Image (cartoon, rainbow, N blue to C red):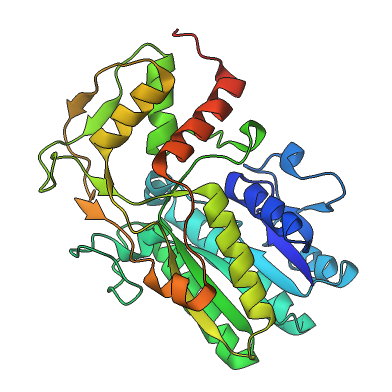
Length: 326
């Protein structure tokens, strides 16, 4: 098969491309490079620079490259930004998906993997979040991901398209330093930034009903995440038309913010005590995945632990920013 990887020049997308190549799958990257980096695309992998909103470019790419499956990662993904720019997020994430699916169904592509998010759950009041936990997203970003799942599922049923929606939890780490996350929107790079600026990392609230009072999250190594995409893609390529899967991607283990900061301090050698600031609105106390269904459906389980994530992410940070305290 030949897989079109939308957003394949992004942080997660580049890891998916790498994992697909290592598995012997042919790939084509489709990315508008608004946040993606062309240098992340491996030599020999075609790169089409265009938006998923460009129907002609999408249809032409599918036809010219003989695409037989799609992994759709291209999306806007900053929660706070989505609150400020909801129309932009719905246009990019939902309308872009609709345009892509229209081209996919018109060309008869049989398999479609959709990048969703644990943001679809909102603030679940459960010990482990299963795929059957009610979805109550709390941001336009989360809403667009849930709407995307609905659109993918409905299209699959109507057009006998085999689909999978993969709900990511907290992604961290890197396969190699050059593929590390360059954004500073998640906990690990946010702590790195504070430490290299000579400042104390911040913890938003330490009075939650958790063992140490800080929020608990499920962290997944980006390489494990990428390998889950390969497993999903291969499952769909052999699945009956109309197959529909919705799967969490996590380790099923909770790590508190304080535990993560302490591990980062130990890994980087900075040893700066965090400063506790007021809670952020909308932060649930605990969000940890049940990873049972993906193990049953795909035979996939995470292999890498939180230390692997932090160490590999730090190597990438050092490559770009250096280690000196400013």
